[in-house]
Image (tube, rainbow, N blue to C red; front, top):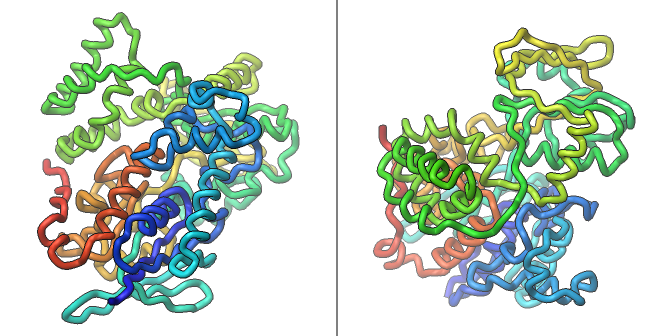
Length: 481
């Protein structure tokens, strides 16, 4: 019997868990090749910080890597020295270091390697090109890595994770070339983002989301005593995690709302009836319905949500551990951190510093901030045709994938198969994670990724014939206007 070979591009959480599930679930002979470059395999950028000060934004009890084993992470933590004296309930309520979660994923990967030594390989090279050949029976995918080595496989999973932020709209290509490190940092996740920064300096962070929070924590870790200004369109900082409870009744009612306007009205009416209390439980109640609600919206409604409501959603949905939120408040109270709502108009070099021109949202006159370092924390680039990634470009240029019309990743069907130029789902190219945000909206937290990895591996473990024809989920249609 032919042994199917599957390539997984990307060794972060998503790629690692697809590999683990494929090797556990597959009833037929299968070989898995996991291509990874950059960050340690299994950890990715999210779970590779060296300091224990960087905490998960979700309590440990909600962070199992397996959707069908909800206590798996807590059970693993109970074997670690720092947690052996705690009860399972106490561990489950703890916000543990992200580095420890990385160790958990690393342990899963190592166990999988030991159990499948003949059929699982980790290849520490970047895949940079993909082509296909077809015959009457099947399609074969040909990958090339940076060293030039070729690999031929039967199926490919793109677990690409997050790309660095998009260039600022106000910058021309000439401007971008002039803004060189260390004055301007285009990629906030690179290891030397804060290298050489004096303890007394002025820093401007572009964005006020979770990447900004990580950067502020990194500044605190290295004893930074200077001033920071964080700039974003609305000036919203994430809220603290207060409760894990969910208002399931509200979530069920919202799931029946036919339009975006109806959803917003119901939310506001319920919040008013609760006298402004319980918003966190309301948002938690929406969680099981998020994908269905998003896919129900028309393309026009999705665009309205993105332009008017997505910033608010990010604040209430992606929350912070209480101790992290408290440290931000302390920075603000001391005058070390200022949050400014406005749009960046320009970045120019002036006498060895960067001048950041900002038009405040309040309508006040434009102001100029002088900074010793400006860091782009606006979040990952999701407009895939604009990515400077040779693998993504080779796939798009050959019509093997379609960019999402919302400029949020790639178009997929219900199981993560890439839609090809003719609109049909590929039988051999799949993706998960941030690349599916246009189709799913919420597609970057562990809660979503573990489900996607489990379901995709199960889908790929089935025989080609029969299953794909009879059981393939319906294509997620591009939302219509």
